[in-house]
Amino acid sequence: MSRPVLRRRTRGAFAIWVALYTLIVVLPLPLALIRLDPGRGFWINFSVALGFVGLSMFGLQFAMAARSAAVVHPVGMDIVLGFHRQMAYLATVFVFAHPIILFVVDTQFLGLLDVFTSPLRAKFAVASCVLLLVIIGLSVFRQRLHISYEAWQATHAVLAVAVVVTALLHVLLVGYYVREWWEQTLWIVLSAAFVGLGVWVRLVKPLLRRRKPWVVESIDHDVDEVTTITIRRVDVGAADDAPGRGTAGAFHFDPGQFAWLQARRSPFAITYHPFSISSSAERPGRISFSIKAKERFSHDVAGLEPGDRMFVDGPFGAFVLPESGPIVCIGAGVGVTPLLSMLETLADRGDSRRCELWLGNRSEGSIPCLAQITALEPRLNLEVVHVLSRPGEGWEGARGHIDADFIRSRLPEVAAGSTFCICGPDSLMDAVEHVLAEQGVRPDAIRSERFGMV
Image (cartoon, rainbow, N blue to C red; front, side):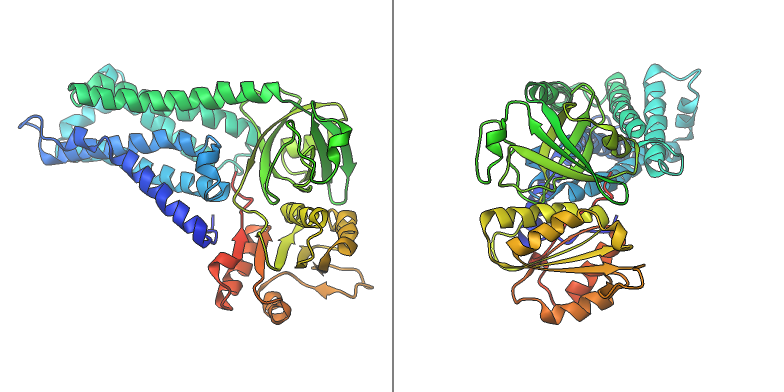
């Protein structure tokens, strides 16, 4: 995944976040760096240190994937999950460096690979490493193996727990580095934190969602296999749909954010799906999502019916409407959905700031949410520019793609002090972010969030 542009506030939050992460990761280092036995040399202790660091990093993977507001909101889910992936690779290097160094220092350790004759502690170590390779392989090659997102998410969760548990059992059975009271206390605290996080994610949060279910209110089928689903909380009535009306049962979010959805299943189900909210934040009694059929759940959305029960986890995301100043919304396909939430919110607030929407699609008949876009134009100080790659013969608008040349041609007409809000395929976002930076647009005036994150 390409690195998203970080705003100034986000960069500061990310620096603090990384510093805290590093502090937790290095906590176990004293266990291995203290020379407890003259018979153990530096390289053995060093290899164990790498193993402990890798194990701590894998434990923290649960925190990054837990969709905690404290972790996600400061920087955005796309950055958190991107960091999650990169740290998984680095942790794997540390974990495998541990046995490799041992094998180089003393070839007798190679005998521990024989799971039929090796002690139980070695069996757990081998099992953890094998499971780790499986989980990484399934994640990297999921699409090539034609594994559905639902199946991958379930196996990923189970295998991740198995990797950490077998590794912890290996550490406990070795015993050498967990003899002292402070060593035992450290691992008890870390293990309790990981278990507590799992209980929060898999039991407490689903129980809270179960108390506040949602219900499908309407389903609208749009062009190009796009379906707009509107849902409301069961305890929110029709009168609560007025703009700006706040209720105890409302779902308060910032325009541009997204939520994870589950339909027709228990709130304890492992699989939830992330989608951007496309409705106004000023109408918190109901929220809408415009979803393009892709994998299992996005296909199943079209088959939902009014009255079907749903569960929502969120909101999430640091990709939000700028508080002031002109904005330029740039998107392609269903990447328009969070941008629509921003524009709908501005319209409901009566905000007269200058807005532009540059939207790329294939043809006139493939523009998602066109009726919603058209209805927004008279309500806002809004200019809409549709860019079509394969338009019909009568098309008089822009042709081609939203690429570097298009951005350069439009920039001279953009209002001074504009903030650019970008959402779409990685190729579009890469091109737009690059050319905006090239043209001297300030980093904190570029806001984006990647959708190829799961």
